Length: 466
Image 1: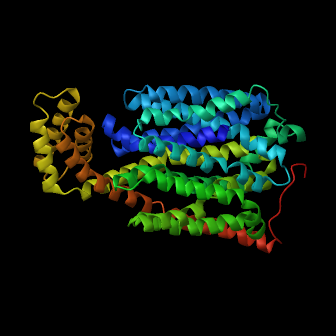
Image 2: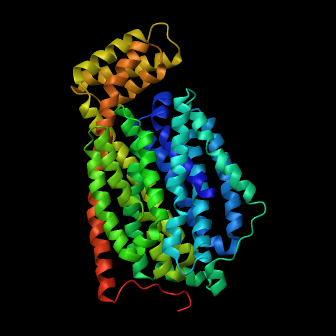
């Protein structure tokens, strides 16, 4: 239930990105920072609390996550602009990190002989929760009450459910505590083992391939006129089914073989998504992408827990922290910057300038504060265009978003959407393409690990007492 709260938060924040851009006049980069905070905040709480899991206990960490999910959601619902949205997303993300800091060691403790498979099955409920949150958001839109605040409110349903369950549920000790592994030993295993460093570097890339594009899929596809949230639901529904059936796949390929295959398949799917096309082509590419990325996160955790077992909760926490920190601080904002740049290049110059000039004149007369702000932004963008001879970036897209957010003139809003939508869609698709080369690097890393296992007689699980 706690992991469902985490994933519903991921789905709903992704589903409202386009609405936030329009209501608050945010740039793609602004939205990238909000989406990024919803990820790197996860890393902060992992770094702080994962080393304390053995001491504080898993139940205590989940109580903190409950408070974070509750507070962060309410902050975002009541937000008045970029900074309150950013803070709310950050608090939610820290709660998400607390869930992982507690529950990954919990699974490893409950199933010490079958960690990779059971971590995959536990993480069914990340994509599973994305499906629930995505369908809930789509359903609210379908019945005509799709305000973004209501979509965020969906996070509170599983949050209250797992908060209630926490009142009576007993928790075991972590695997490290049972084996008598000290905090010092846990730190030494985490930082003095070469394989751990390799896995941390690989985790930064696998998380970028999985979470970076997934974070942008709804907004990018919706800008192109497609129900992006349904594509996200399809991707995550397929991921949930495949993770649940991870046992035969892991047994046949071995964990390192699974990672190698995942890198190759996800690269093909992501490249296909970046090429765009109609609904059938998009769903086909999304299917390949889902098959590729579905095993990345839990299998990475499983390999660390099985091959560096004395790293314990700290090792698992470091993996989650590095993955989400890189996505939140680098990948998501970078994809936003790329999308802004290519979207600006795609705008039809003369049509856009004419629209901005018309808006600067029309909205300045008798409009409210939002209309006046949109008129000012449009006028400033036109003046800068006259000065430099090309559409200024990001001022042009910002002005178009301000026009859309003003709702002052239905004709101008519709025209601004028709100009900005295809450009935002194109820029977002190009940003997907920039992530594809990471899959090639991952194939080299995992291919080397797989061949070493083959030469050594196969994949070997190390026991914590060995």
